[in-house]
Image (tube, rainbow, N blue to C red; front, side, top):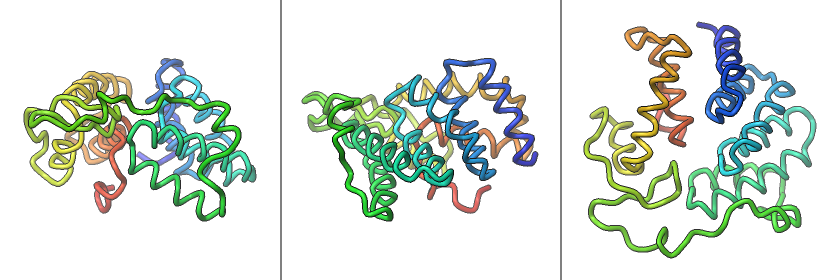
Length: 215
């Protein structure tokens, strides 16, 4: 499946699920991959409107705005995303956003961030030492139950086991059924498997480096 076909599939999925942040994020990501930045901007703005805590959406929104010629808008999106990611403990995303701001010689905060602060700082419960059966989940930014097993038995599975909570994994299992059904994915097909992994990466906030050379 080429990128244009994928965009049309994702557009149908987003239209059928107007309040589904993942569906709209996946569409925004695909539009950026196709360098259709102007189209990606309203899609990603809708994501952060639905879910102001979707930190990776701020990262992509900043890229789309900047590439579409709105440098100030891109910087503002990154600053809001950096603030949210730091408060939620999503340090990998915070570092990615910080790198974008450094390229622009822009600070990580602004008056707008101070005015709109999206998230409350991490609670004492979220910052307490982990128990042996707990993990600080990079999806939720909170402490959760450690997964019961490595889901794939490879580098990706090991990372998920170490960084994703059982609660977040179960949420992905529910969402994955929706993704498979609505995108009509055949997991026995290489293209279907790629789309499945792309949606899993997006939903769980997994780092790009894990998937290098796979797609």
